[in-house]
Image (tube, rainbow, N blue to C red):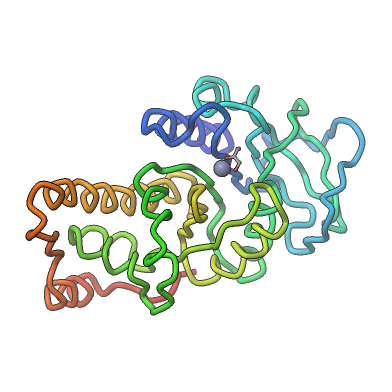
Length: 270
Ligand code: 2HA
Ligand code: ZN
């Protein structure tokens, strides 16, 4: 089981780099591993490292985590030299290294708080992903999109209306987390509030944070939404030349048809 999970992590890390979403050390991820997997040694390395918070639902659980300052393009080639496996303590407030120590990502708080919530809520999701998808980040610079609090919000409605697949494969849409300092607990807490209802959230002027059944699922959802953002921005280049012509978007009726035919969930299926 475990080698398959690690191979998938490496594959996704390669895609993130190829898409230009993982410049230098940009982006990070965690994946929960089966604790009883015989491939995970019970041996640990070094002292317990405090988490700075207590996350009771991830106690004793093991995670693959990307290393801080490590590059996605290197992770694609050698995931165990650019990340490692950690085991959370019995009390959920520290971890020990199960494989050769690599200091975890600066966004560890966001990842582990989301993982804690996923286990607490009985979800079978195992993966959390943070990346810098270009077109979605570009849209996060627009105040009218950031300030729209209707549900689904204006950004989601715009993205869904670009091609039917966006609504079909990202039916929960995307919500926005107002700007916070990267790596901060404030960012992690704001993310946690939104990730209860959304599989993908947009960190204003920074990137996205996504959850998924596995890391490929998390990647796919970001990819689908970013594709729609790209189509929207490409359509707007035509508007730049022909200001009288705005991108039309699918009609409300066409979108309702997609919703009905695909019987799309309004909430995360467990
Ligand atoms: O891993 O992307 O947000 C580097 C980052 C921090
Ligand atoms: Zn980032």
